[in-house]
Image 1 (cartoon, rainbow, N blue to C red):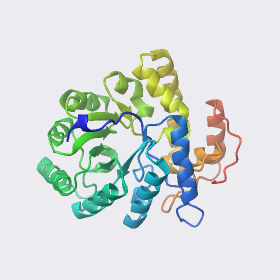
Image 2 (image 1 turned 30 degrees about the vertical axis):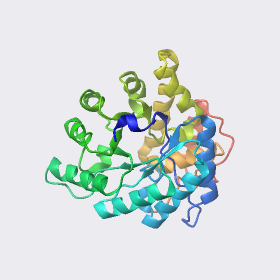
Image 3 (image 1 turned 90 degrees about the horizontal axis):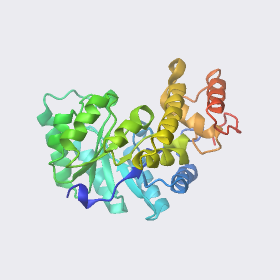
Image 4 (image 1 turned 90 degrees about the vertical axis):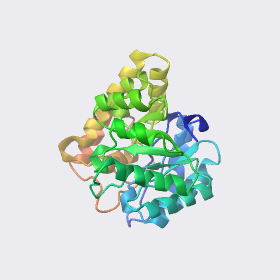
Length: 309
């Protein structure tokens, strides 16, 4: 299995997991999110990644979200399940379930708490996971959370593992992204996770798509943005990149956490963001007012209050 074994491309949002005020998963809202992504023209969804607050979910809850995503997508778009975990047996169990319910692939971080001794430890982890279940694997490199960063040189070695077909590269260092493209771009499909930081440059240099939390709020604009870059409309691509960058800066301003900000932004647009789950808390004032006013300045049609929906 290699990158030619799958037809993965375009915008595949890392979707949020909407919770209600008690912390329970709002399954109806989750299904609506997937329907919105289909309406936007996205080519897939990635449940239970970082934006999906996977760290707050039990394994059974994550499996439930895989099944709901497959049922809701119903073959219209791809479902790439986030199955990252520290112990390989947990990853393997979730990969097996993802395959059983019909997911098109899985997205896996390296073990993300213990600092591993050498790159060989990371390679061993992915080989063990790949050998156990035959399902296409998207690597996930997000150095801010990984602990064990996937360097371009290591990614090139991981690309030789049988079921590895793609990577979500979320490094904030474009030099490393560029080097990953140079070393591994011929072997695996490269998706940028930084649509709101250097999306234009990533796509111009060969990224086949984006797996990002940005489309949860940008919606159809994220697809137009990707297609403009892909098709050479640099003026439109740069204009939409500027909007995405300013939105993400707004989310993180004044010490705000990205994930509650994304959900608050969705709720303000009448989209089913819902509540975050502890230890994350919903935004309060003055953050909600700052977010609402900032989104209005960026041209968003903010008609709704701050209530989670």
